[in-house]
Length: 257
Image (cartoon, rainbow, N blue to C red; front, side):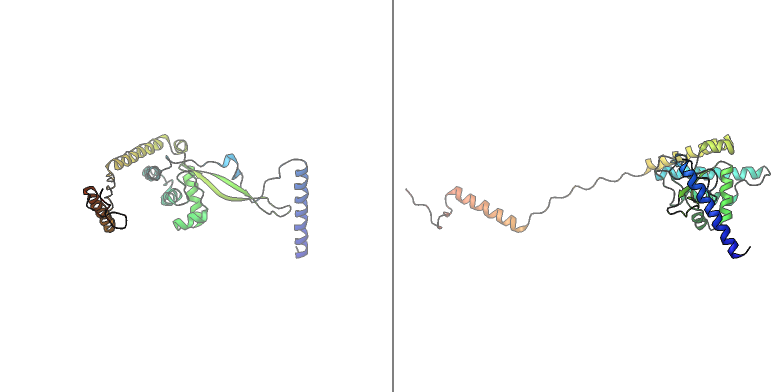
């Protein structure tokens, strides 16, 4: 195909797409699925894309206790399966990606929001893209994480072209997924480890010494000039009481009657 023919074919496809989208708009129908968007993807504002949830109570200490218990459960599950003569289901890369996903700065503890880009996970772990994708797939397959694919609208779409594009996934952790995919015994082990982590957290809080009360501020010393003035006024008052002090009228004593 020559360059002119290729250009003509592109124009024909664009014209057809424009006609279809215009007709759908006038008919009140939604435009068809964009080719660059994965299936079962939802707009970031769609209620189905709102999967963020706190891992604990939103505090830093409780969230880290939750993550510690989940990562330890994942390690034990991985080694237990290998001990049965099977291939390790998560592998070391899966454990590393799980920790990076939950411990890095993109995890907002108060809201539970976890939505890093694959490139961010690559930078945090040092793994290549395919390693990250494979590790996430193994973690999802065995229930340790879940995610929802999300899209955003293109601000200035080309006529007849796509109007949406893929954006970062939103990740979450759900105990029910662990039970249904890895097994209830794995879920129960996680709960056991989490209870121990919470008990240690409470014990550390009790053992932490209380801050001493702030010292009582000492009275501010009076300036020397103020002290001298007060003494002089006191002496003057005593002299007036004795009747021996000078008059305030031109410095003369009042005439006797």
